[in-house]
Image 1: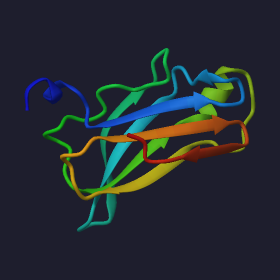
Image 2 (image 1 turned 30 degrees about the vertical axis):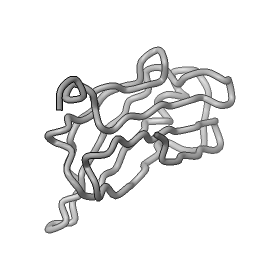
Image 3 (image 1 turned 120 degrees about the horizontal axis):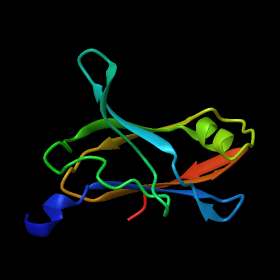
Image 4 (image 1 turned 60 degrees about the horizontal axis):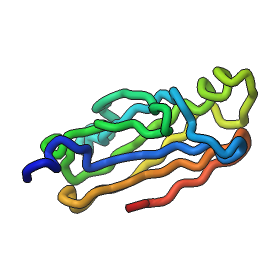
Length: 120
């Protein structure tokens, strides 16, 4: 696979749309559903950088078909800005059928709303 081996097949970008800025230092965790036991297994944790991105979430080898959940600690993020918010966290659940593709999962966030989509 060459140089792509070092890049995560799953990326995210969190934008604070209320302020028009990247959401910096937001904690994120990635989980995979165990279909046998119906339990979420923690894969990794990280936090967003100065650009609102969290590189290196998962390696290509570890990224297999299945159901995943990305959890964004939005309440802690807003508290760090000394602001309140309605959502203490956001969990986005998604299914991967072709793990050879790249997946981008942006989160557009304000204190009282959020939206997401499958990006490229």
